[in-house]
Amino acid sequence: MPLKESTGSPSTKQSYDLPGKNRPSEIISFTTPPLEKEIKITGHIVAHLNVSVSQSPDGPVPSYLDLFISLRHISAQGSEILYTGTTGEGAPVTKGFLRVSMRKTKPGHPLHRPWLPYREYRSTDVLPVVPNEIYSVDNELWPTNVVVDAGNRLNLEIRSGDTACTGLFQHNDPIHRPDSVFKDQNHVHFSPDHVNYMILSIIPKSFTA
Image 1 (cartoon, helix red, strand yellow):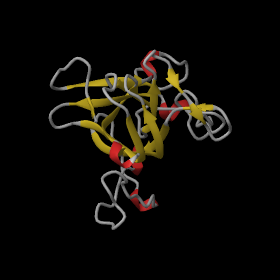
Image 2 (image 1 turned 90 degrees about the horizontal axis):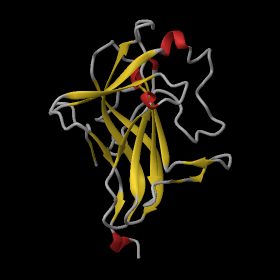
Image 3 (image 1 turned 90 degrees about the vertical axis):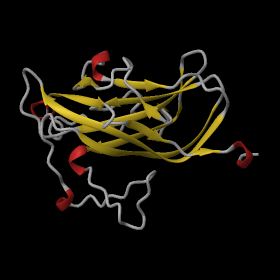
Image 4 (image 1 turned 180 degrees about the vertical axis):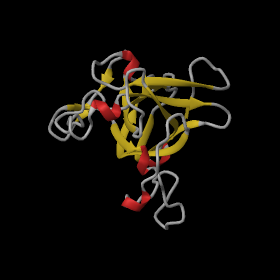
């Protein structure tokens, strides 16, 4: 599923701020048109994004870039359809997280797949994050199983911190995520050389009878 910039410009970017006050400027989202027919999504999901980080006017020179991604199911009436989270809270279809310094994958590994990037998360795999440099990254989302009815939509939401319906497991510790490190502005880039998309495992209807 392609993720396109809303203006249609051939080369541009969308920006979002450090979360904290639930402002619209803290989120980027992409929403499909209403689906023409029912689909069933089963398995792993990957969001391929072209991202960068820049210094905020009153912030430090950034060296970190975190991606928090949620896939949401929107009804034909425009409300979100929630599922049951780990501790009973309402939750989106699925979520994914990536610290961009750990973006390195192992394409030659026998377990690596386009829809399931293989990472070892070793200390030797840490890569630098340089302000204003664009990085193409594969963001794994947790595997899921959901039926989306005709007329409903899917929404992909991107933030630099916890998204709505996070529940108990939050990433807001001031020691591990201090404003002095993460107070910056993040960007998703769009151009012929920076194509953003999401890989979904859609099960053919003939297999679901």
